[in-house]
Length: 166
Image 1 (spheres, rainbow, N blue to C red):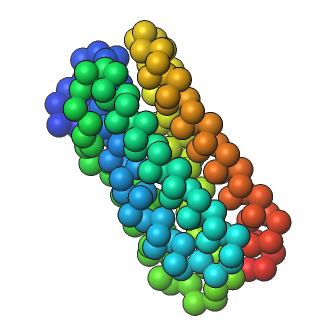
Image 2: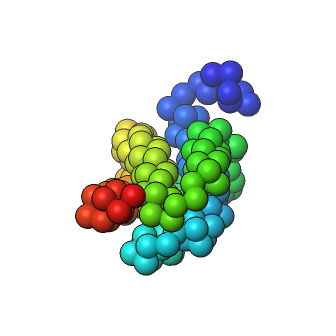
Image 3: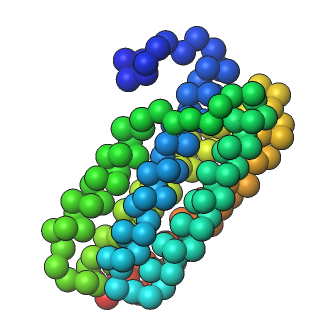
């Protein structure tokens, strides 16, 4: 556990750390999505990013609720994984001159973000249930479902037109 500021000694500690991790990640995603929307040339992709930004605001609000339910202050811990995914997306998008290829790359980068979020929310739902935080589990599961829907929408737009156009 060298990446963590202190050792995690229980499922409660792991749950709290991962909750803080995804809180940080959602805050970083709130910053990244408007930039991705601005870079997209495909109207459907741009709208998907803007729509998911609104959902992301709601995800942060839900996380605030979960922190409240478990009696903790809402705060984040640096998440090197999401920082790396976003950094990689920015680097690759800066290297692509063709707008159609850029759209395909942006959709793929957004899917990488969604997959990371799905893995975190999936674990958090399971742990919340195990720890007896049933209300928190319901809140987290609502977000997990939205992340899955966002991934499916991105996949559809990529398969229906972005990849072929690129």
